[in-house]
Length: 164
Length: 262
Image (cartoon, rainbow over all chains, first blue to last red; front, side, top):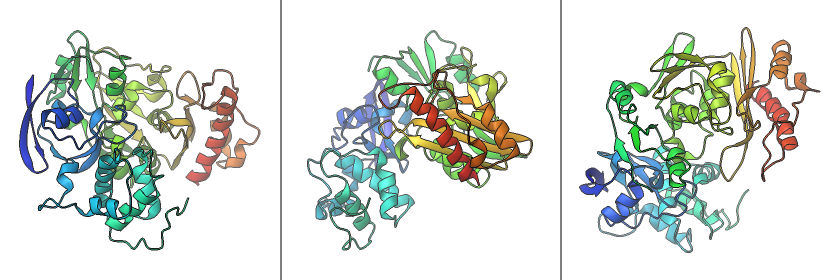
């Protein structure tokens, strides 16, 4: 075991890791941050997406030791300082962008990465960016709507089953 | 996952030394390697991360060529090669999904040489040179069949030198579940000829379509390919497509790439 140190959600944290410890396991088991979900464990589904140095990565396909010293943001870091839901999280609630909620942490983190690169994405850009995140419940339309709403755009004209 | 040792050297020399250990293998972005280790398709005893070696990263213009460090991510290539070599940048921007592109690297993709990967088509179609810690390897010599390359034990790709064509485009028929190419074509037009590289189709991995290259050299239009086709023999057949379907796609995607290159 080696001690791996990262900055997670703004705080410097340390926990033991083996060579084989995935970033997702380090967060969930080492730091008890279980908001990051492991769905497929093969980098297909995107439930485990977190931000590493500001960029979206699939934490099930990254080794914790390789991320020593990195700055990581997880779903737990997306709330406002007073603990209330952050803008993207609130938009998911307001627009019914989740049903079972399993994919939601990854969706929110991918959306955060998109909006930091592209603050006013088009509907097509949102759909394209979320192509590595799979949702079995919603049919995606309300997720796309929530991300557009979180970007401050008017989504009143978007039906529940809009567009292509 | 099974237990293995992990080392992260800060220099190429240290990485080469670490790879001298029994059962050691380099780890770049890990977007294929870690998944295949979970499935025990690959089981190295030691992983040598190349992510800490600054000299392996970056995109730079050197005369008529674009040189890309082997540990440069697809996302970085998509962004930083866009002005010098837009065809290649567009290819990099179509690999996997955004999260995969933030980790996966050029060198990792080439060393793996998946028969349906995108980068082998861009490298072979550009007539690029693969630079390692030991030598320079022409793309025509580098790819040696499915998951097989000219790389020797302990040899690390350090960079790839791409001659910049007059025009180039990549046309990918996406396999939407894997996000690999069901079949894709990379077409590049140079002053002295045209190169056409096909991925996702042949059981031998990426290959050049010589007949199409000859036809396009004298007439760089999609119509120049009318009447040309590749045999279904030796094409990949799986639940996503038959060999005949992939052979057909070779023609379709090459035409689309020529049209996109303009």
